[in-house]
Amino acid sequence: MKHLLGIRHLSPQEIEEFYLLADRFYEVLQQPTRKVAALTGTTVGLLFFESSTRTRLSFELAAKRLGADVLNFSATGSSLAKGETLLDTALNILAMGVDALVIRDEGVGTPHFLARKVSVPIINAGDGTNEHPTQALLDTYTLRRHFGTLQGVRLLIVGDLFHSRVALSHLHIASKVGVSLSLCAPPSLVPASWYGLGLPIYHRLDQAVKQADALLVLRMQKERQKQPSLASWQEYVRYYQVRPQHLRPGQVLLHPGPINWGVELHPTLQAYEHKLILQQVTHGVAIRMAVLYALLRGR
Ligand code: NCD
Image (cartoon, rainbow, N blue to C red; front, side, top):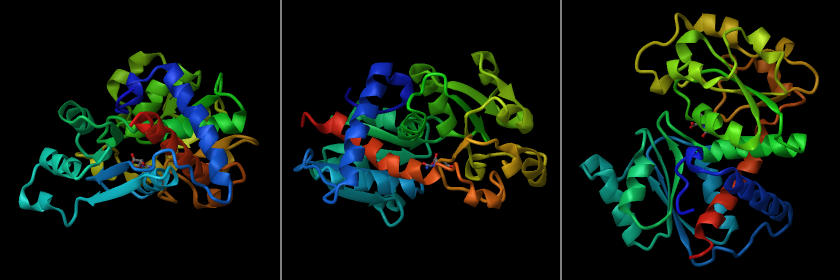
């Protein structure tokens, strides 16, 4: 594998290899030194043209834990404002001797475009409403560690499916790893083509949650909604906010972050016992170490 552009392009065996590598790196992260020298001498460039907290920081930490150097590009304060193209920016960064690029951009297909133009591995850290492969890997890795297997685990994704790259990556990963996926959203937030996929799609949250072992709740992606997708915000909260009474014992709760408490999740769920949201973040470092290692180890 040269690049990680989307879950769409991965085989079940490649996904399994990421999980097994993440298991090894997770153990390393528990030890006092928390470092492996596997990528000493390499440099990872982080190109984030869209805001990010978890994804960017965990890629940075993952690279450093592997012994790599990190070059951090930030769109604000860069020459993009002076009219430089994204491709020129990337080529200039590569000319400094960078061995891999992690890229997030609002444009669908930007990582795929770069992958055709440059010779180093490209890792997609989120391209518009398309894919966010490392998020789907770390979410399923979290479920795998929790349940001991992914076979038959019933995952319900609730929220803004229409604008979510996380949801699309889960659509691709579920059948490859044996997760039984169902979806819940208002009709206006479900892409029309998804009705033909053979997945259960619910419009009533109380019915949807009954069938699930785990809930992955998504944020309303306001910044990507070109026109209003909902009749009213209050109505969304009333019918689709996940509240303590929706959950039954043992059901686990995941969220990719950032959370808008009081919108998609009721604030009292901050104290929910079976919340795996911070474990997702911890596992994200191990998964991103696995991805960087898999793509760069030969270099
Ligand atoms: C997600 C993203 O950026 O797509 N966040 C993340 O990477 N943890 C989801 C979101 O923005 O709501």
